[in-house]
Length: 128
Image (cartoon, rainbow, N blue to C red):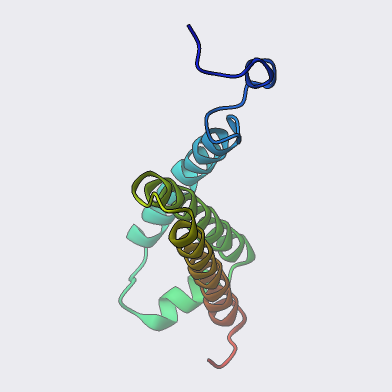
């Protein structure tokens, strides 16, 4: 016996009506984070990360700046998806849950924008 409606069975939608989209987004962002995190860890291990000028020179290389931006975006997106699941699981009242989800999404967008801005400022040698 299935608790899904006939339309839900045909469309493959889950209980929340979103289907597997959220699940796939989490898996794809996690898959993107594996090589980006490995690249970052190995790159930082190979330089004197305590010296601002060394890190500035390292981040000024276009490939390093691009990969750092991708790491920031993938990490904040993945974190946003994970926190959304936690909020949906533990906040049951629709009003407070909607407000909290909106605030969490706004916070993650602000973190992503701030992270990308920081990388760009350091990479271009701009003054903060």
